[in-house]
Image 1: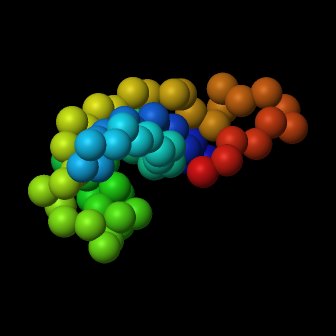
Image 2: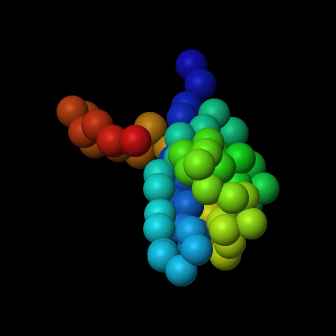
Length: 72
């Protein structure tokens, strides 16, 4: 059974600070991989407007309490 890993991705979109949670099968998410996800969220924006991407691991699905569900 594979575990899902969760990451908090923080970035700037223009002058606004934003963040999103990303779920991935891999235990590591690079800023380049996160950029792909962010660009899909903001497809109407220019890719050059997305800057300062930081990835913070949040753990995996096995670390959640029973009955707890993470929203993505």
